[in-house]
Amino acid sequence: MLDYTINDIDELLKSENYIADKPLIYAIYSALKLEKPLLLDGKPGTGKTYFAKILSNITGFELIRLQCYEGIDVSKVLYEIDYAKQLSYQNILKGQLNEELKGLSLKDAIDKVNEEKFFNTEHFLIKRPVLEALNPTNNKRKILLIDEIDKTDAEVEAMLLETLSDYSLSIPEYGTVYAQEDLKPIIIATSNASRELSEPFRRRCVYAYLSYPSMETETKIISLQANVSVEFAKDIADLLQNIRSLDLKQIPSVAESVEWTKLLFHCLNINTINNSSWEEIRNTLSTLSKKDKDREIIEKFLKKQLA
Image (tube, rainbow, N blue to C red; front, side):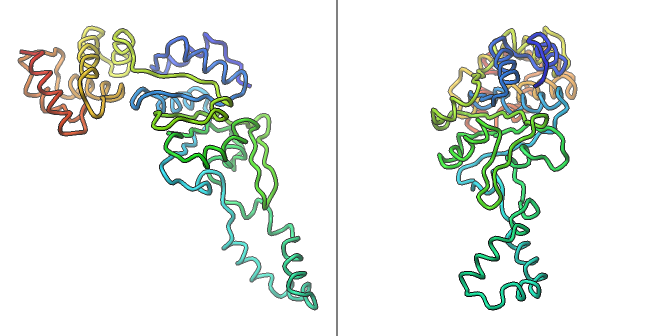
């Protein structure tokens, strides 16, 4: 168990320029103290994935990212059996096997091979993110990020329930793998709410909802992460707060607002948002918008604001 106080977590996040509100700080504290997974829910671009990277920096634990997508197979999530390797070893040991199987019926021969513990060992397991997090190859504690779990189907979600509740994984060909007490991974799952997660999945987690930050919070984030004055950060944050209220297909994330600020201030030497710098500002909107229609809407809004 990580012996962090609530104040420790707050200060450590700030040291990484990550500004978190009290509900999130308490959720992190609860997840660490109770040794439960942390489920971060919210719209895309609110810093859920970025938080896992920050926690990796703070703890020094290696981050394992399981990027979920529609149709992902459980073998890419949990583990795989290296049947090709098994077959190769069987071919190498064919002579010895032939002696041991001599005179046996086909069924008895198959049973005999299946009884050979050598072929059902960790040696033939291919570790995918979940198994690697529970039983790390280098014996170093991990952070398992199950990113965008809502993009998977119910089968994959159900297969993760054992790991979420018991920090274990049952492998029929091998047995049950349990995380050592001092190597238990920190598990973080993120969801953009593209589908409703099951009640059993939610019950196994500590829950936190991440929304887009308030004007005050985003000003702090931009100022710290883009290394600009509070006044300039406030101007950018004010624009972003209004831009997110527009009818956009893809709302600019907090990370994109920081990147835009860096581009304006550090690359183009723009330290005031006004009409005199409109042409350069206009040409940087691809940093904020990744859809042509959205860019047109943002451009029209900003032109009117700076007129």
